Length: 475
Image (tube, rainbow, N blue to C red):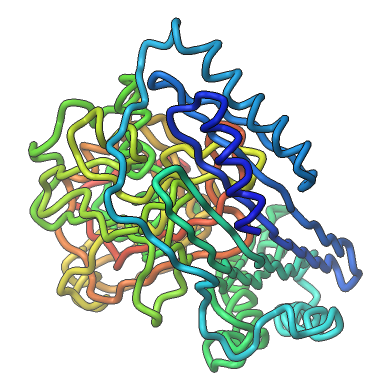
């Protein structure tokens, strides 16, 4: 495959390109779904093709092809260079970056897993979601519907550029998740319980005691049952504890997008011109990383789509903004180092600044200490989506469930928990973080930006204690 990429590079340089990047993706995606004990989805897709980025006078052009014949690749290169040349005179932001003196040659980099999904047939994977759904149902009459899903993503990625870099690696993600809809104990309302487990792991992940389909389904059932008798969340400002997942979503959605350098360059983020300024309490440290410790269920990303080795980027350190998420060009413009955040969903898209695994660094509290320190307020858990605005720095997220805390103890479960507010105000309300860092990733969900959705990412945190947060709910 490097031969055809090298051919594309040679064509681009002969035609007058200042610099060329060539990528090849061969990725397989499988989705299996069961709803109410009936198979609803068995999709299998393959994304295979070449993407070319050509640079001319500080402007880039991008083109792609699914045809690997040389004539098609040549036309693809000509198209990319033609776009760059046509845009060169009118572009207001130039994409110059320093050439690399030392080249990288890494071939066939892969994770060591015991049970790669490519080695297991469809029946094995259907069995996982059938077991998951049965554990969630548990033969009760108050469950109205169930949805169980399995997803996998794997294959190979190749990259070459005019610097002489040659990189190939084999991404991998699996995911198993369940959603249970149940009737409330009184009235006509419906409540929900959900659970999932995924990441850059082999299928041996689902052999572990706290990750088996039976365990995941059982916990979703228990949480749905608890929600049947839950009281509506109060509205207003309360002391708050957010669990690992919801705090991780805050790290990704509320902060991470604001730190992406293209938003900085277009004045579309509240973090512009805030480097080395205090934006949170000293308890706030936020990191974006490509390769995390194996004990976490993170997304494995050793290189980005510009061939930059991913790094551990400290974005906020003890409340001080330290940096942004860069591709090579934005790093040069803003006087920083590339962070390995140039990412594309697949070969049909050009790379843009995107997150890897974004998380709040752990603190020193236990969950029990955090609840005790909370004293009175809301403990918000998990999330089912929301809205963010990087330009305004505002957010709104709906937690799946939660608890009302009194006298440092759990009083009763609550539902319809919606947290909202401004990012910088929230970061300045952080009182502490628990030590139990969890990083969450998977096949489903993912990150969306500029029509590139879903892109695999990871997010995480310990549990975060806030002195105050705004909640919507029942007055």
